[in-house]
Amino acid sequence: MSNVIDLELKVPQALEAIKLHQYQKYLKILDGIEDKETPEAIEFLNLKSLEIFCGLTLKDSYGLPISMFESVIRQISECFSEYTPLIQRFTMTGSDGVSAEFGFIPKLDDISFGEYVDVEKYIGDWQNMHKALAVLYRPIVAGKKGFYVIEDYEGSDKYAEIMKDAPVGVALGAVVFFYRLGKKLSSYMMHYLQNQVEGMQESQPQNKDLERSGDGIKVFMDLHKEMSEGFQKLPSFHYNNA
Image (cartoon, rainbow, N blue to C red; front, side, top):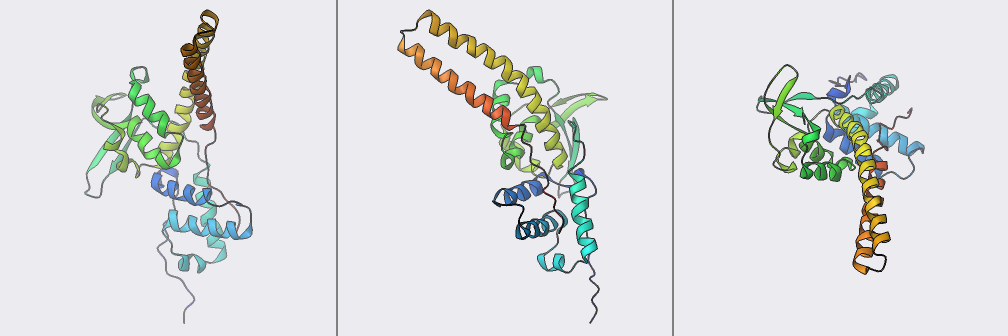
Protein backbone atom coordinates (compact mmCIF):
# COMPACT_ATOMS: atom_id res chain seq x y z
CA MET A 1 0.00 0.00 0.00
CA SER A 2 1.36 3.41 -0.98
CA ASN A 3 1.90 6.01 1.72
CA VAL A 4 1.95 8.81 -0.84
CA ILE A 5 -0.99 11.23 -0.56
CA ASP A 6 -2.22 12.62 -3.87
CA LEU A 7 -3.87 15.94 -3.07
CA GLU A 8 -4.71 19.02 -5.07
CA LEU A 9 -3.71 21.45 -2.36
CA LYS A 10 -4.90 25.02 -2.98
CA VAL A 11 -3.01 27.30 -0.63
CA PRO A 12 -3.84 31.03 -0.73
CA GLN A 13 -0.79 33.03 -1.72
CA ALA A 14 -2.28 36.43 -0.88
CA LEU A 15 -5.26 37.97 0.89
CA GLU A 16 -7.04 38.47 -2.43
CA ALA A 17 -7.39 34.68 -2.62
CA ILE A 18 -9.23 34.52 0.73
CA LYS A 19 -12.92 35.39 0.77
CA LEU A 20 -14.67 37.31 3.50
CA HIS A 21 -17.02 34.45 4.38
CA GLN A 22 -14.01 32.18 4.98
CA TYR A 23 -12.52 34.68 7.40
CA GLN A 24 -15.88 35.10 9.13
CA LYS A 25 -16.11 31.35 9.59
CA TYR A 26 -12.58 31.21 11.00
CA LEU A 27 -13.26 34.09 13.43
CA LYS A 28 -16.45 32.44 14.65
CA ILE A 29 -14.46 29.34 15.55
CA LEU A 30 -11.66 31.41 17.08
CA ASP A 31 -14.09 33.38 19.23
CA GLY A 32 -15.57 30.15 20.56
CA ILE A 33 -12.27 28.95 22.03
CA GLU A 34 -11.68 30.20 25.55
CA ASP A 35 -8.00 29.32 25.90
CA LYS A 36 -6.30 29.55 22.52
CA GLU A 37 -2.84 28.64 23.83
CA THR A 38 -3.44 25.03 24.88
CA PRO A 39 -1.94 22.31 22.64
CA GLU A 40 -5.45 21.01 21.91
CA ALA A 41 -6.67 24.46 20.85
CA ILE A 42 -3.62 25.03 18.66
CA GLU A 43 -4.07 21.70 16.91
CA PHE A 44 -7.77 22.34 16.41
CA LEU A 45 -7.22 25.86 15.00
CA ASN A 46 -4.54 24.65 12.62
CA LEU A 47 -6.79 21.87 11.33
CA LYS A 48 -9.74 24.23 10.92
CA SER A 49 -7.46 26.68 9.07
CA LEU A 50 -6.59 24.02 6.52
CA GLU A 51 -10.25 23.11 6.17
CA ILE A 52 -11.51 26.68 5.76
CA PHE A 53 -8.74 28.25 3.69
CA CYS A 54 -7.49 25.23 1.73
CA GLY A 55 -10.54 22.97 1.54
CA LEU A 56 -8.85 19.97 3.17
CA THR A 57 -10.82 17.40 5.12
CA LEU A 58 -9.73 16.41 8.60
CA LYS A 59 -8.51 13.06 7.26
CA ASP A 60 -6.42 14.72 4.53
CA SER A 61 -4.91 17.20 6.99
CA TYR A 62 -3.79 14.44 9.34
CA GLY A 63 -2.18 12.68 6.40
CA LEU A 64 0.01 15.63 5.38
CA PRO A 65 3.77 15.40 6.02
CA ILE A 66 4.56 17.53 9.06
CA SER A 67 6.84 19.81 7.03
CA MET A 68 4.06 20.50 4.52
CA PHE A 69 1.52 20.97 7.30
CA GLU A 70 3.62 23.65 8.98
CA SER A 71 4.51 25.27 5.66
CA VAL A 72 0.87 25.69 4.68
CA ILE A 73 -0.11 27.11 8.08
CA ARG A 74 2.80 29.53 7.88
CA GLN A 75 1.79 30.62 4.37
CA ILE A 76 -1.77 31.38 5.53
CA SER A 77 -0.37 33.39 8.42
CA GLU A 78 1.83 35.39 6.02
CA CYS A 79 -1.22 36.31 3.97
CA PHE A 80 -2.74 38.00 7.00
CA SER A 81 0.45 39.94 7.68
CA GLU A 82 0.01 41.85 4.42
CA TYR A 83 -0.49 45.60 4.44
CA THR A 84 -4.18 46.31 3.88
CA PRO A 85 -4.81 49.74 2.35
CA LEU A 86 -8.25 50.95 1.34
CA ILE A 87 -9.19 49.28 -1.96
CA GLN A 88 -11.16 51.75 -4.06
CA ARG A 89 -12.32 49.32 -6.74
CA PHE A 90 -12.44 45.57 -7.15
CA THR A 91 -14.09 43.07 -9.47
CA MET A 92 -16.00 39.91 -8.61
CA THR A 93 -17.16 37.18 -10.98
CA GLY A 94 -20.27 35.19 -10.16
CA SER A 95 -20.89 31.49 -10.68
CA ASP A 96 -22.61 32.42 -13.95
CA GLY A 97 -19.39 33.92 -15.26
CA VAL A 98 -20.70 37.48 -15.16
CA SER A 99 -18.30 40.04 -13.68
CA ALA A 100 -19.16 43.26 -11.89
CA GLU A 101 -16.87 46.01 -10.68
CA PHE A 102 -17.61 47.53 -7.29
CA GLY A 103 -16.43 50.94 -6.14
CA PHE A 104 -16.01 52.53 -2.74
CA ILE A 105 -18.26 55.54 -2.08
CA PRO A 106 -16.51 58.16 -4.26
CA LYS A 107 -17.19 61.19 -2.09
CA LEU A 108 -17.62 60.53 1.60
CA ASP A 109 -18.60 64.16 2.17
CA ASP A 110 -21.86 63.28 0.44
CA ILE A 111 -22.54 60.10 2.43
CA SER A 112 -26.14 60.05 3.63
CA PHE A 113 -27.09 59.77 7.27
CA GLY A 114 -28.69 56.40 6.54
CA GLU A 115 -25.50 55.08 4.97
CA TYR A 116 -23.40 56.30 7.89
CA VAL A 117 -25.73 54.75 10.46
CA ASP A 118 -25.76 51.40 8.62
CA VAL A 119 -21.99 51.29 8.24
CA GLU A 120 -21.42 52.13 11.88
CA LYS A 121 -23.96 49.49 12.91
CA TYR A 122 -22.31 46.68 10.99
CA ILE A 123 -18.62 47.49 10.71
CA GLY A 124 -17.90 46.77 14.39
CA ASP A 125 -19.13 43.17 14.00
CA TRP A 126 -17.16 40.84 11.73
CA GLN A 127 -20.09 38.48 11.35
CA ASN A 128 -21.98 41.38 9.74
CA MET A 129 -19.04 42.77 7.77
CA HIS A 130 -20.61 41.75 4.46
CA LYS A 131 -23.48 44.13 5.25
CA ALA A 132 -21.02 46.96 5.94
CA LEU A 133 -19.31 46.32 2.60
CA ALA A 134 -22.70 46.38 0.88
CA VAL A 135 -23.03 49.99 2.06
CA LEU A 136 -19.48 51.13 1.32
CA TYR A 137 -19.16 49.37 -2.05
CA ARG A 138 -21.70 49.28 -4.87
CA PRO A 139 -21.54 48.50 -8.60
CA ILE A 140 -19.87 51.14 -10.75
CA VAL A 141 -22.41 52.42 -13.28
CA ALA A 142 -20.30 55.05 -15.05
CA GLY A 143 -16.85 56.54 -15.04
CA LYS A 144 -13.39 56.68 -16.55
CA LYS A 145 -9.84 56.69 -15.25
CA GLY A 146 -9.93 57.70 -11.57
CA PHE A 147 -13.51 58.98 -11.60
CA TYR A 148 -16.57 56.80 -11.29
CA VAL A 149 -20.21 56.75 -10.19
CA ILE A 150 -21.79 53.96 -8.16
CA GLU A 151 -25.38 52.84 -7.76
CA ASP A 152 -27.63 54.78 -5.41
CA TYR A 153 -27.98 53.22 -1.97
CA GLU A 154 -31.06 51.01 -1.59
CA GLY A 155 -30.19 49.31 1.69
CA SER A 156 -27.47 46.85 2.67
CA ASP A 157 -29.56 43.77 1.89
CA LYS A 158 -29.22 44.27 -1.87
CA TYR A 159 -25.56 43.22 -2.08
CA ALA A 160 -24.88 41.75 1.37
CA GLU A 161 -24.81 38.11 0.26
CA ILE A 162 -22.62 38.95 -2.72
CA MET A 163 -20.13 40.72 -0.46
CA LYS A 164 -19.51 37.49 1.45
CA ASP A 165 -17.41 36.49 -1.57
CA ALA A 166 -15.39 39.73 -1.56
CA PRO A 167 -11.64 39.40 -0.89
CA VAL A 168 -11.04 39.72 2.84
CA GLY A 169 -8.40 42.39 2.14
CA VAL A 170 -11.21 44.67 0.95
CA ALA A 171 -12.92 44.33 4.31
CA LEU A 172 -9.74 44.78 6.35
CA GLY A 173 -8.79 47.93 4.42
CA ALA A 174 -12.29 49.36 4.78
CA VAL A 175 -12.38 48.71 8.53
CA VAL A 176 -9.09 50.54 9.13
CA PHE A 177 -10.11 53.42 6.88
CA PHE A 178 -13.57 53.81 8.39
CA TYR A 179 -12.21 53.54 11.91
CA ARG A 180 -9.94 56.52 11.23
CA LEU A 181 -12.78 58.44 9.62
CA GLY A 182 -15.22 57.49 12.37
CA LYS A 183 -12.75 58.50 15.05
CA LYS A 184 -12.49 61.98 13.52
CA LEU A 185 -16.26 62.31 13.10
CA SER A 186 -16.85 60.98 16.61
CA SER A 187 -14.50 63.57 18.04
CA TYR A 188 -16.39 66.37 16.33
CA MET A 189 -19.76 64.89 17.24
CA MET A 190 -18.93 64.24 20.90
CA HIS A 191 -17.48 67.74 21.28
CA TYR A 192 -20.67 69.23 19.85
CA LEU A 193 -22.96 67.04 21.98
CA GLN A 194 -20.93 67.78 25.11
CA ASN A 195 -21.47 71.48 24.53
CA GLN A 196 -25.18 70.84 24.09
CA VAL A 197 -25.38 68.93 27.37
CA GLU A 198 -23.47 71.60 29.28
CA GLY A 199 -25.56 74.35 27.71
CA MET A 200 -28.83 72.69 28.71
CA GLN A 201 -27.65 72.03 32.25
CA GLU A 202 -26.45 75.63 32.73
CA SER A 203 -29.47 77.36 31.23
CA GLN A 204 -32.27 75.29 32.80
CA PRO A 205 -30.90 72.98 35.50
CA GLN A 206 -34.35 72.39 37.01
CA ASN A 207 -36.03 71.23 33.83
CA LYS A 208 -36.49 67.46 34.20
CA ASP A 209 -37.19 66.90 30.49
CA LEU A 210 -33.94 68.60 29.56
CA GLU A 211 -32.09 66.61 32.18
CA ARG A 212 -33.43 63.41 30.68
CA SER A 213 -32.42 64.61 27.21
CA GLY A 214 -28.95 65.36 28.52
CA ASP A 215 -28.72 61.89 30.02
CA GLY A 216 -29.76 60.38 26.70
CA ILE A 217 -27.11 62.31 24.81
CA LYS A 218 -24.47 61.26 27.36
CA VAL A 219 -25.42 57.60 26.90
CA PHE A 220 -25.16 58.07 23.15
CA MET A 221 -21.73 59.69 23.52
CA ASP A 222 -20.48 56.86 25.73
CA LEU A 223 -21.79 54.26 23.30
CA HIS A 224 -20.26 56.11 20.35
CA LYS A 225 -16.90 56.26 22.10
CA GLU A 226 -17.08 52.56 22.98
CA MET A 227 -17.86 51.62 19.36
CA SER A 228 -15.05 53.80 18.02
CA GLU A 229 -12.55 52.25 20.40
CA GLY A 230 -13.78 48.83 19.35
CA PHE A 231 -12.76 49.48 15.75
CA GLN A 232 -9.13 49.39 16.87
CA LYS A 233 -9.39 45.73 17.87
CA LEU A 234 -8.95 44.13 14.48
CA PRO A 235 -8.86 40.33 14.68
CA SER A 236 -6.10 38.54 12.87
CA PHE A 237 -5.07 35.02 11.96
CA HIS A 238 -4.08 33.11 15.10
CA TYR A 239 -0.92 31.27 14.04
CA ASN A 240 0.80 28.70 16.18
CA ASN A 241 3.34 26.05 15.39
CA ALA A 242 1.88 22.58 15.35
